[in-house]
Image 1 (cartoon, rainbow, N blue to C red):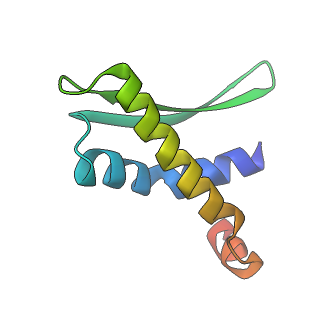
Image 2: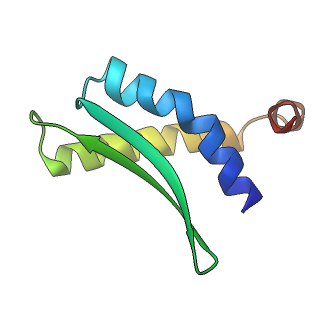
Image 3: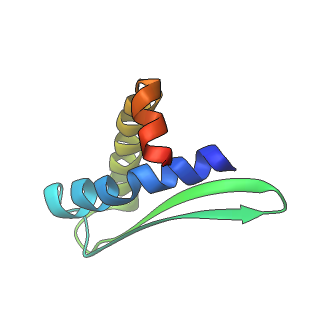
Length: 84
């Protein structure tokens, strides 16, 4: 669970900044972490009157793939600094 919590923390600001402010996908952009029966899930919710669910899904997936790759490439020192 610790890695998922760290990921959620690190993606908190970029999720809103990229999907809401820069890409202007919707008027509500929310993300969260849920733990149910020992299973950890991360979700992103975008409410939009301008884009289809398919378009939003594709943009959210692109955001997650790009940012998760950056997290995986994060040097151990930077990761430890974020933990503190």
